[in-house]
Length: 484
Image (cartoon, rainbow, N blue to C red; front, side, top):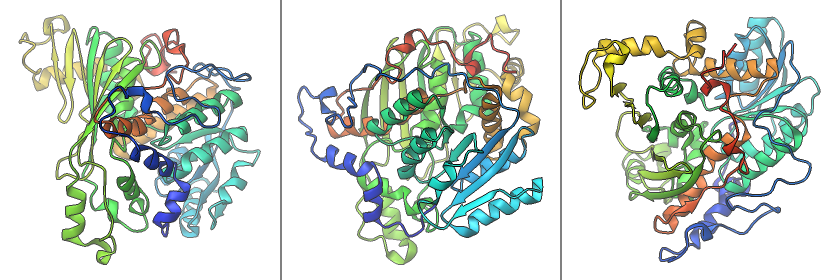
């Protein structure tokens, strides 16, 4: 739901980062023995420590089974990005778009027109006010609510959605603070509704290819991964009527990784985070801030109206995460430098290494796969890489590649939506649950905490409350699953 005239003051009133910014401002760079002690005091009875007891009345959701549905009834809030989800649902023979919602009347009507044109049935339209979405999620004829709004609205909308008995499908990031992450987890457990973060990059062709090689043992014992969100968004951050109306505000408030999940989500699935391994702690540092200020001062976007803004987020943030099994993950964030797009998407183990942008693969024993014998210090040639891709194309991509053509982000949007809605239809557990949404999203706050304390280690909460030690891999990462 875009809010074109959202002022900074009003934004701070609605954003969880307002309190986070104040908290980080008080942290000392000479904190000596700080580390995890830099956490803010608990709120609403939620401790932000490592492992917490599960409150009475809550049950785990890592293997949540729900009643199968003949058809999945969908509603969408926020029809800028959300229109992609409307279009994907219209292409699914088992899904119906029941209602659409946006603060902009024109955008809501256009989405409804698209549904009527393609399906002959017009969804109910909710628009015009910031609270109109509350009426929509209270309907009794909706199974799934997509939330594709500015980040400040994600958690309030998801909590209300689950309280009303619907599954919440959240755009990235699911939340911006650790407290918000715990609230998503606790509400999902209490209501027994799915809280799925819509990390479309987990469904890219290359990401699924690497995931399948990992689950089939090509990389041997996994040791290290690298990921990023490197995307020149300088112009986007100043666009009026779109993400620039709210996304740039975070650059005023937090020096850390503002958008970790596009790179981290796939890597977490490679490593089995939440199902055999878990994040343990993070160390983060940022470069100086230069490029966003330089772009603003030289280009004077929107007639120079942003001249007084002061940005605190460094151009490049680099974070290192250590896992319980001793693996390491590098995560980078840079959306303001003149540099080609990359998510890095790298995985290394005792059997081989993959790096993306462009895709490259080196393996210890090429002969065992019928490939040209070359040393592991060389990347496979194009022909051998193509042979490995053919052999290890993920079954989900193989199944849906043709149907995904023409859909957003090279088809990954369709694959993601088909997969999650199909899980709801069959009553099975989606490929990511509330624990994943929380673990991947909490990096926003925790990277900022580490930066603010001079790059000291900060503990990452275990949102599974110890279940990661016994939780099975979800179907997308399980080589025994048919993904039917």
